[in-house]
Length: 163
Image 1: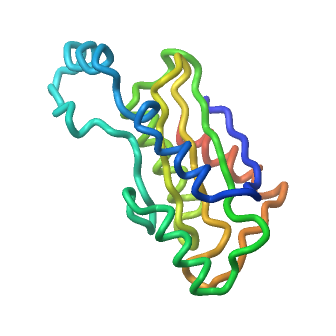
Image 2 (image 1 turned 90 degrees about the vertical axis):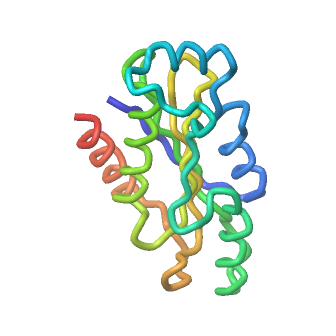
């Protein structure tokens, strides 16, 4: 079962996007690539193994796309984003499954109104997903308001997906 937490980001969208998509955390190291390749029956192309996905934003330009939405609706102040983490116990999931669960969670939780960058970090024994959620909806320009009930929804959806 994944563990989840979420908090508001007030200081810098570029800082949190940069942290989430950091290649040192989202790419396999050379040793990890060799071990993954040797263990993978399907022999996936390791050059394409990067666990970062953008929902309603381009993976390579998530910051620019999110800032465009903020400027378009004239909402650049206050909370700039939300940072959510979904973490798994050591050995509980593969990198592919971890990322798939993260993308599905983001789609079900925020995908109908918000831009989300999903990044799976491989740099620790506990694989985990980082979600950077734009605080401004690309649909209607309304700000995301974090409530206790939404956190309960996050936990419930994450648990359902993990089952």
